[in-house]
Length: 239
Image (cartoon, rainbow, N blue to C red; front, side, top):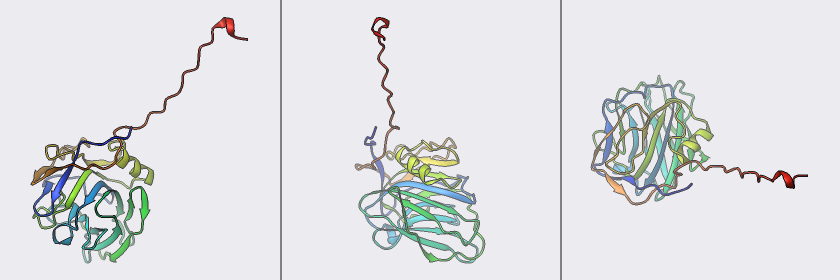
């Protein structure tokens, strides 16, 4: 049944953040990032951050690019940080799915927006070896509050493996339906619920968060297939 969720968390573009400075589980070779996001603007400094792994070293992050209708993914390597961009329309809710295998500099991230593949453009080729993230994560900003997201974020999910396209779509349409490899799931219905629903206890703490009135078009539960019952014919009426 398709329905409207209560709300989402709004990030103000200047000081908001949702973080956990000690969380672990992000030091994996391949991973998938999922979230519903709505950009009211490009965010603080033009690079409003959706998600950052590693509070101190910034091992990888997903953010707005300093251009309209564009998101950016970056992964830190020992010599040169890899950077890629892909399209996502500002001013509306977008279902974002990004997967990346950092085991080779030849790999590029794969992105889906609103359940369809999009072209990923390489802005900087990674050089060296991938930097392993230390502890901590931040949603909607960096810990130092210098790249605040401007807009809404809902149902952030992180997986320690590459999900198939079908799994990505299912996890975004029916949050919580895919659990294999789930490290973090922040439902983010409002500023009072910053809990991690993955079962790993990586709850966040918030700064300057507010509820947002608009909601992403997700499903509250999987549709059920109803099989009609066969009519029972009295024995006297059977041939």
